[in-house]
Image (cartoon, rainbow, N blue to C red; front, side, top):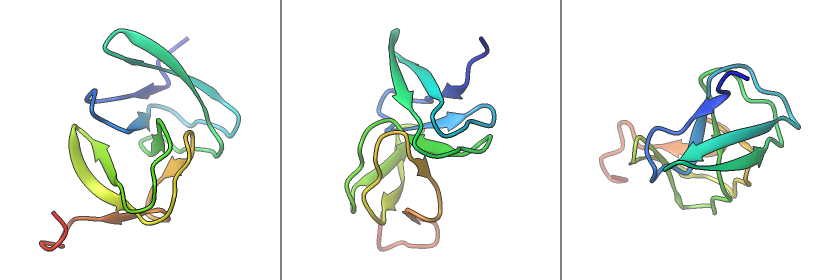
Length: 96
């Protein structure tokens, strides 16, 4: 089976879909040669992110090992992470 998602850095709390993923899909993620399974609670489009673990409202979204935004509400493991639940840092010098 082709790789379904990628985690860029071991610090990341999101993975990026390498293909269209559907609600209920079980995605195997490997970090530091340790594999674990994430069950998707929503569909995730190619190139979009999903949560590897629960992310509390106000906590950082981490991709590339860097903070890329803040959860605007609680995000549960396997949930699509995008504009509807993330406040971005771009153009916000007060949030970095």
